[in-house]
Length: 553
Image (tube, rainbow, N blue to C red):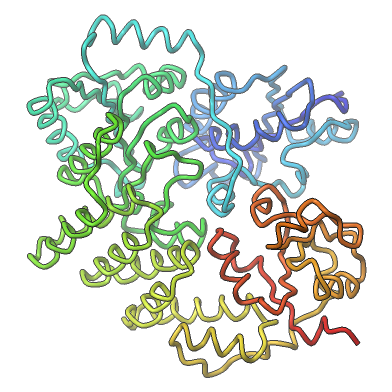
């Protein structure tokens, strides 16, 4: 049975699809394993229950297909990218009960139970976490050698540009626009002969390829072998794809370069705007977690013109040449909008956000462009993301004044409720300030005092912002103060000292701390609140303590 020197990683098929989610699991699990200092890593695959198998494994594919995907994708991914001491495939869920009953191993996920399995490694978890710790997969030397030999013999002087297609028979609205990709590949070969576009077909179509692709290089082997696919992505100049599973081999590998198109698809599917924003809490404009400047998401469809624009700029960045300025890209989108060239306006506004991701001006330009071209709901959610990033009053006004369509009224009310319900503790003058800044009429507002309770929050892991009288009083009023992880303060002279036996940290140290809430106990609460929002702390984790509750008697 596993001992305390063993790290037991459980991959439960009852709650996890047989898909490239396995790559997310590995990327999230490996840093935890490495920090555990365990010598042994054991992977356990737990089968789905008989009930689930009898009623149909998934709405996406049947049970036999799921078993095939488990062998070809999930099991292969762990064998390739996970340095496990052992991998066990259990025959029943009862077997895991026996293992856990006699094990004192370190468990992952840490709160896993067979009765209530958890998916902290899902897409939703990774995207909701503002700063996920995501490891980078390591591609085997042998796989890299195969790809290097293939390239040196067939394309010795070429820069490989992969095009990964999605041609699935389920949720077909998410598929690649094959005509656009073919047109892009033809244009690239004719205008820039130093590049060699290489198509990687969808595994479903790998043995019956569309005849229109016969004039291009392609590598169907990569569709069936996950290590060859990962090695090809790592060795290629640029990787191009839409929202599909294999792309995870790019964004969980820091050595790849990629452009990722068509995050949103029409209809009811895992790539719909509704699914992104409600299930994942992932809003338009974001890049994939832990990306670098050569790993970009373009929030537009895979049109030939869109692909060409983004490709040219990424190649320019790779070669170390100067990009068009921020103002130039914004001007291009605005000129296109004035000329009624809507698609060009969409392209340039999305590309400006992707390449100048930290500039508020690109985001506001994108929001304006979407609003003025009938994409108000997407503009609303992009503005919501901008508000958490920049804490700029313009964003709030975009959300609350410009998104006036009736269909968006529930979203507007949702934002209003989110803001005030997250802060029931806000007192009059601060509440009035928020109302004034948001320019939003507050009609039926809840009390900002009656929801606050130190007792209800005593079980949470807390960081108190304000290492002085207010923070002191705040700590004293807790039923138990054991959950106060640290004090935080902007006064650098206090950093590293202890206050009431608790370490004082800097705001910059917050990103390395795991906490449930930050309590702001200061007369400068509003300024600190804005500071933390600008740092990317979710508003639901912030609590402004009413001054009358921490006043000295």
